Length: 196
Image (cartoon, rainbow, N blue to C red; front, top):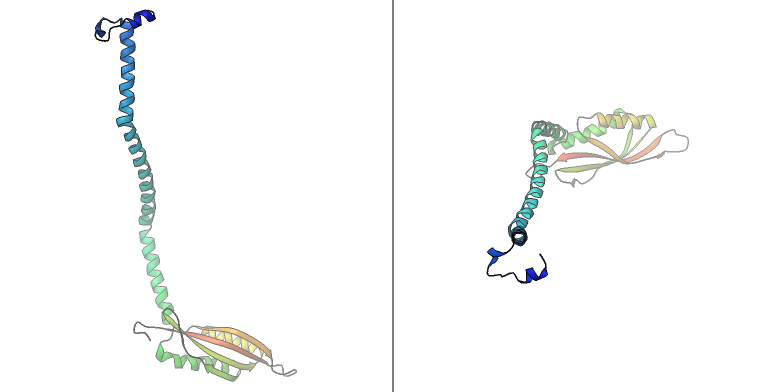
């Protein structure tokens, strides 16, 4: 088959064309149909498949995180109950409004029991915080280093929370062997729902 035979092909009578030319034409038409089918229908399906696979991965990761949480749900509930119990125990260590005066007496008695001499015991105004109030007490005591240690240890042993801040010590006089300690003892009071 040569070029002249190709030029003589009649487009209105394709049935008379040689078999080889018909086969080539069928292959070309099939290729065009497949290409058109891909771009008009299949390409969108591939893109949709890719999007759905990405969504599946995100959902799978989300599921794994939630499954891990669900598997530990009982442990979380037990931990929450323990935290609530611990929080309640800590709140019981904070004095209420009626117990503050007794606590001030306890702080004073602890210092006297340790052998300290009080020069200043001055409760300061209450400082409100989130759910509690700080009750600072400025103190200046005279005693020995070991008596100070016994006093601080006694404060730590009180049934209510008392902390010591801004501690400074200096000798009372050159040869007396005694020291003057200035500090701020802080206790804390729980602010109930009524605001006080």
